[in-house]
Length: 90
Image (cartoon, rainbow, N blue to C red; front, side):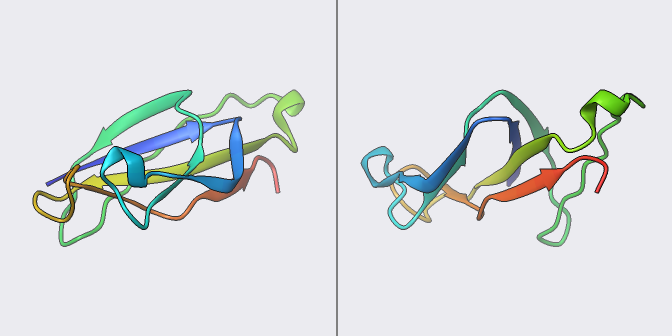
């Protein structure tokens, strides 16, 4: 129905168990520094993010994770993706 993308410089390794939030089998791998909504089409969603052309950002690692609202899938009605690490400039 709706997706939420999250970017953060805070990464949780291993992930934080989300069972107590009604999402058994899901883990939170990033903090919630920046979030944005995504509208899926055929089960996929993309988002373009502009970054300033600043050499100081080279090598910065940013965690990324997505959450999808799926009514009835569990008590919370949401599922989480795996987390990924994005390295700027690599």
